[in-house]
Image (cartoon, rainbow, N blue to C red; front, side, top):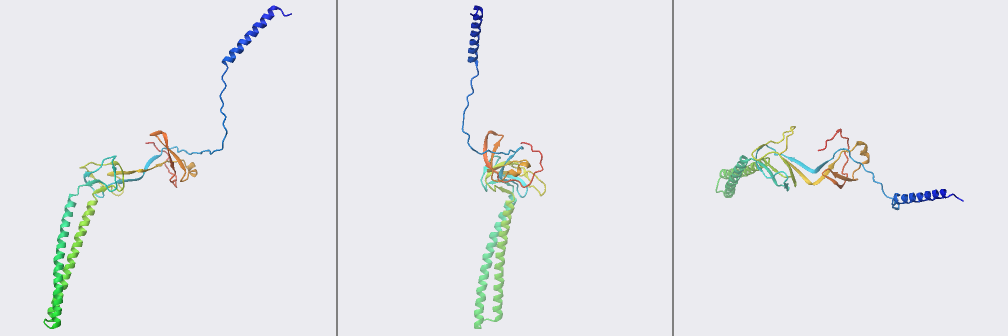
Amino acid sequence: MMPPLIRRLLVALLVVLMIAAGVWWVTRPKPVAVVVREIERGLVESTIANTRAGTVEACQRTKLSTITGGRIEVLAVKEGDRVRKGQLLMKLWNDDQQAQSVWYLAQVATARQRVNEACAVAANADREAERQSALRARGFVSSAKEETARSEAHARRAGCDAAKADVVQAEARVRLTRVEQGRTVLYAPFAGTIAKIVGEVGEYSTPSPPGVPTPPAIDLIDDSCLYVKAPMDEVDAPRIAAGQPVRISLDALPRQSFPGKVKRVAPYVSAVEKQART
């Protein structure tokens, strides 16, 4: 028979083990929930990212300057304005050309008046020559008088033709002055937004001479069509082709991306090693 002391020790040990087991059961880590899903076959997307900053550019942009220089008289727009095609943007002082145009228009009116007079005289001379020919056929006048009438008719007809030529010449001068006035005026070649203006009313605007870059008077962009020019590593160039889908992200909109397509891949490698972000 087991001694009482050993029996009490075994009972105490059993109680301690049961308490330890209870503590472990209460403090044990919870099992991790596992979600089981069926694996489906799908496409793995391979992407190529450019490591340099790209630039957003307009499909159409023009830097406008007048053909001739002069003092700015009218500045019809300001930076940020939207303009329509054919709208007046800027006009230089050209009062002298306008006065010359008015003078040439007066010359045109005078030349047309001379045409009416000269051609009326020529018509009368033609009728007189015909009358003298009829009288000569009947023997009433000499051949010398008939010849004189014919010569007079030819001379008057030449005067009529010369007066008509003067009208054409005067009209050409008017067109020339209009062309000269067009050299001092800027119109929008397409609808868009004024990006930058160089000059103020009263200042002198100078066009860019050949080989000497100067700031344009007006910078016009068509913001209805934009594209992104992004430099890529030359090792990735063979994997890029026109028509491939792209995702465009902008620093100004970090949480948004815009879909697009590759329009063109440059046929050469740029020698620029570094590109600063602006």
